[in-house]
Length: 54
Image 1 (cartoon, rainbow, N blue to C red):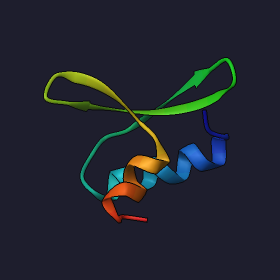
Image 2: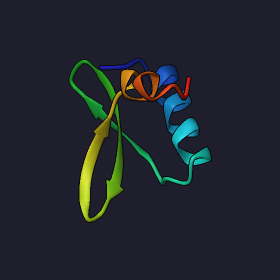
Image 3: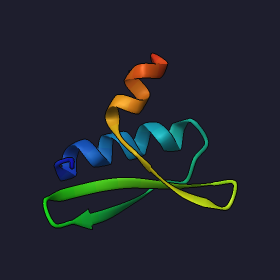
Image 4: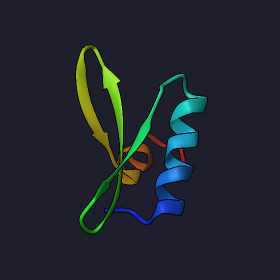
């Protein structure tokens, strides 16, 4: 899981790409979620790095 600052940065990047992310607190940190085609998707920083959007 991510620290709050990392999750916030990821959420801002997703927002800039046109998504509406929200942060969810887990037992060991935070996770960023988006709604995509009716499904809740958990997004992690390495997902963006694989796409080259870092």
